[in-house]
Length: 75
Image (tube, rainbow, N blue to C red; front, top):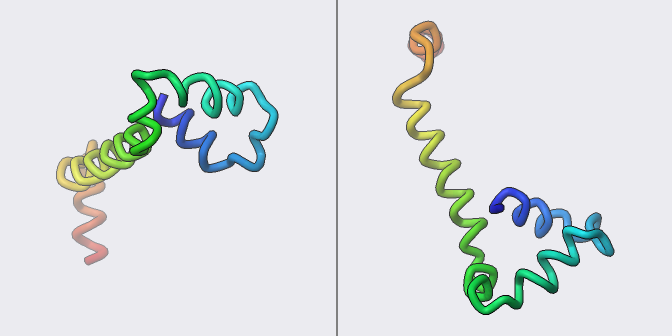
């Protein structure tokens, strides 16, 4: 949901008069439960936080051993 909401808000000019614009701009945004999530951009910050945590994790523990050797050789 956070990726879809992020894309819909980032490309708002391109999504005018589409179903996703209707869903996020009028229907979900004004539901009592989701009102504060959209008001404080919780979904966008959650997506950003997961991206940062994933980047840090993958820098510390890469998936293959050869990538560590490549990083050491470059530095």
